[in-house]
Amino acid sequence: MKAYRICAVTERVLRQLWHDRRVLVFMLVLPALAMLLFGYSFSGDITDIRVAFIDEDNTDLTTSILESLQADDAFDVTVLAAVDDPERLLFESGYQAVIRIPDKFTSLYYAHFAMGVATSAQGTIDLTLDESDPQIATTIKMGLADAAMDLGEGGPVEIDTRELYGVEVRFIDSFAPAIMGLVVALISTVLTLLSIVREKVDGTFSRIWVSPVRRAEFILGYVIAFGLVALVQSLVVLTIGKTVFDIVINGSIAWAFVCVILFAVGSVGLGTLLSALAQTESQAIIFFPLVILPSVLLSGMMWPIQAIPRLLRPLSYLVPLTYSNRLLRAVMVKGLTPWQEPVGFAGVLVFVFLTILLASGVLRQSAGERE
Amino acid sequence: MTERVPVFLAESLTKRFGLLRAVDDVSMSIEPSEIYGLVGPSGAGKTTLIRLLSGLTVPTDGAARLLGSPMPQERRAVEHRFGYMPQERAVYRDLSVAENLLFFGQIYGMSRVRIAQRTRELLGLMRLEDRGRQRADRLSGGEKQRLSLACTLLHEPDALLLDEPTIGLDPALRREFWDHFRELNGRGRTILLATHYLHEAEWCDRVGLMQWGQLIAEGTSERLKAEAAGRSGRERPDMEEVFLILTQASVAGGAS
Image 1 (cartoon, rainbow over the protein chains, first blue to last red):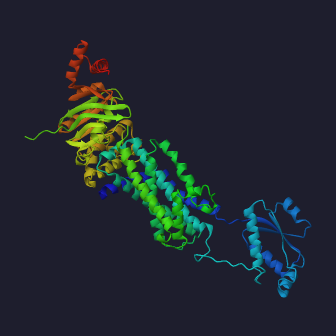
Image 2 (image 1 turned 90 degrees about the vertical axis):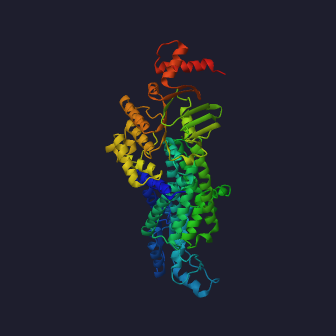
Image 3 (image 1 turned 180 degrees about the vertical axis):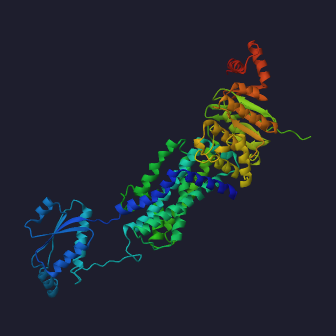
């Protein structure tokens, strides 16, 4: 094996990427776009739910509940005068919830605390709720509970929350590692696949196999080129994550890069493998959804694997991104080292060894036996 | 006196793809400094024969030797010494002319200085001087073909396997290619080329006529003409007639 031949292949692949401005833009814009699009649309924060607020009691306490609701981004609060039928208000005016604080709420609330739990009627807030969208309904319930908790007296309910890994982890924080994996997998697999199929179509493949270039050198050349690309893409994702979404990274970025590059290596292997199944570029395009769909749907990227029907769940464990997600989340969100997430780490390593090994065999095939 | 090893040698060389005998029991020997032309209709097995000799295809039976090394088993020993020009122009369309040459030089271990020097020489020879920075996919068909030939010649191989190097070229350009071939030949290079153009056969030292994977006739164009004349009673047939006469004779005689 000769380093200069590996470098020659790497240099050539990078030059090709550089010349194809569309690919270049795609490579850099895709991670940015994915991060922004997914980051905003899946951030899990629901905003601007229309809520009507009717205060029949009008005390400092009820005003503080209103203020607390108004301060919450989730709600667009309209204060209304007393009405007879909150349900009709909901139907006719398009509110998603009507919150009514009845007369004497405040006095009952304090009396309850003074007299002890079992002895008196508790102050109640009427909540009329549109349950047709469970996510919105849940947000309203939680928002109101939060507002009632903020009363300062400790409130009637005590919630004991334990937060692991130090900080509050938002959806976007655990999403950034998944985006990194997805983008790197897509670009490396798809571009390797296209590039090699193109070599077959154009006949440059034949030139390479009569030259001193070995199969291992050829694969390594591709691996290094796309490893570098993966590094740049990860930087784009992290920069946007940090500047736009202020994502929390608890772990070591160096380890994250090591893992991403490892995953890129496996993806180059996968692309090489798939190239054996396509003789033309249009045949190669058929494989794109095959790579993209399972990655997005089954890898636990958008929703946890536990949310995938039991019947389909075994498929999740065949998707490489599943392991990359576990690994990168462990490293970036939990701040672990790769071997502290053995399933993810082993999964990615197996992916790398298997694809590279098979890719090497596949290249021997397509190098030697073509009509 | 040193023994002259044939540059290309086929011994009962056979390649089957399923039921198809793409190359069927071909034996041939091409000596140093020869220009040998393979002619025959498309599908006759010329490309497969060339790929067998280059080590790209593994023979089903028989043996292929290049400069004495069995192919593909010992192709490592000779890989620096031969050049192969595939039928599909085989250049990177998204790289510039100079970058194509740079890559094919680098993988042969040539230094950047040497590559730059050879690039200047070859671009001059191929009249592509002002095309160095042009992307290959913006070249005309003829220019692309000249670039393809330049990529093959870059590392100065002794033995050349050229698969239809002149296909699709206009007559003037084709003559120019042949001037290159003769010039290379004059410097001791051995050339095995496949061609569609029958009159090109007359410019070769020897011609092999292929049909259905078999080498049905071989010799100088004069000899083939004489043979055809003998079989058909036709006086002074041209190469096209030679081709027709000999291939028909093979149909009549060799059906089994």
